[in-house]
Amino acid sequence: MVSPNKVVIIGGGGHAKVIIDILKSDPEVEIIGCTDTHAKGTVSGIRILGDDTILQDLYLSGIRHAVIAIGDNAERKRLASKAACIGFRYVNAISRFAYVSASVQLGVGIAIMPGSVIQPDAQIGDLAIINTNASIDHDCKIGALCHVAPGVTLSGRVVTGEGVFLGTGAKVIDGMHIGEWSIVGAGAVVVNALPDHCLAIGVPARIMRK
View 1 (cartoon, one colour):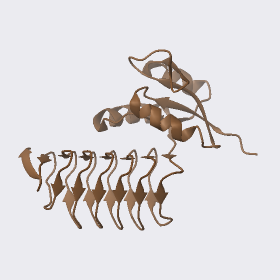
View 2: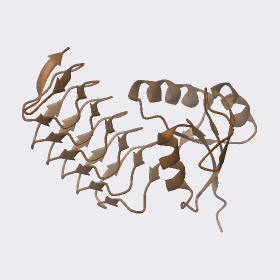
View 3: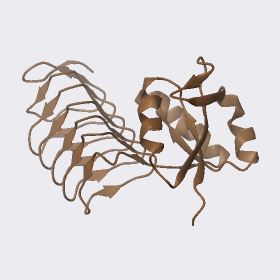
């Protein structure tokens, strides 16, 4: 029997609870604890070991794998860079209650939550989050560090740049491109391409600021 990978969860909030719930059912993973700047005690029964300053010591003690359990894209990027510089390798947290087509290309350090559907030939970039009941149709390309919030629906061939946030229940029609680090508000319907670093809200989605 192969020994499970010992994994530290970086983050101790609500998003971490979902990640922990997924990883507890993965026989290849042994969660050794969480790190969090503010929280103390436990989260979902997992002990909080300290803040992020202990990551170096954890690595030196033999812990080699990590999951960045932070929903905020910019903060996830910062912590992922820090952990990678130390030497950590990322583990994917993929719910057994999600549907992921066999032809999907998956990055590392990604989270795919229960009820989500990812259809054939889609690509999910490193450290992306596909949240609860989100639907990613065929040939979509989700960039690194994106967060597709609960209930989002992407039609086929949608492309998102790095760090895009799609708010709860947003919808994107076929073939649209959303520029890097842009935000699409909750419930918005994207019917036109969006540039980098913009905020778009409404039905249809309109750019409110860049």
